Image 1 (tube, one colour):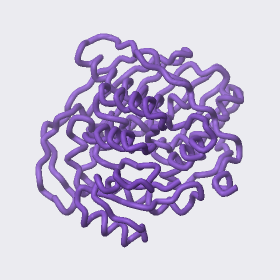
Image 2 (cartoon, rainbow, N blue to C red; image 1 turned 90 degrees about the horizontal axis):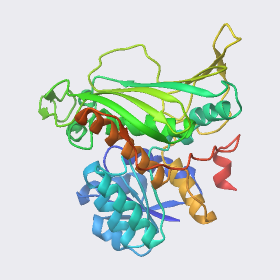
Image 3 (tube, rainbow, N blue to C red; image 1 turned 90 degrees about the vertical axis):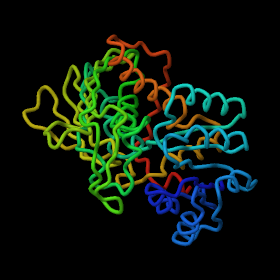
Image 4 (cartoon, helix red, strand yellow; image 1 turned 45 degrees about the vertical axis):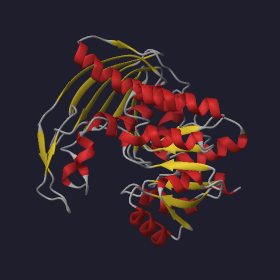
Length: 364
């Protein structure tokens, strides 16, 4: 399948680097709001065509668009691509607003096209090994979970961090999708959420180049504590923070009737995975049962292309990403309104990948 990338910013590099790993798609064009940036990426990664966004969308040879634009225009670009007859896989979050997310899903359905969304890290070795341990009963019936993403903020390293502090950013919309996709993959969809959110600082100072010393106005909560009630019964406590300088909390832990599972960082593809059953005195590191333990961004694209060609649903699909979007909005709305938020959406828990899943699957 011939693929075009729209958005040649920081994240585009890993997608371009990894594209050669997968035999079922090739990147034939790149586009950006700044044409010179697209030309630079095309030259750097030997991509045949460098386009403006409209030129790429008008190219009849492009079957599939990877949307790497900023969150504020995810929906606009995705809908334009769908209306041009192209499948779309986007960076997270699916959209900024629920209304835009719904329009994206509806447009894909109307056009008979597929829409998918990052993160695809839950398809990696670490989360899939964790899923297998749960499915095989190693911790018994899951009862509860914890999830923590607590850092000091992206202005310390990102070359252009302002959008992280605008609507559609903050720790919830930036990092929440990694944790929530992992949790839904492990425990199924969420029925109800509760949250308390605040803004630790009203301004941030950029500490990275090339904008060192510039101030950023913070327009979205940066400290969000929440509780998630899953449809199947487990309850999770989750903290998303850009206001934390240090902590010693785990990324994700799942607590079951027979033991505890320590799940690796869902912003990565690998391990380690640790298990401690009720009758064990020590934690055990579990060998990874699946492939893709390195930085494999683009795996979701390959799996989605595979699903399109097989006439089945992709695992990192639009329904999952819309459900995650509603979870995030629900947590923030709960804080504003001071009450639980019952979700109107659900999704199918993604199928576990087969054991031993690795790159050979895409080169058969």
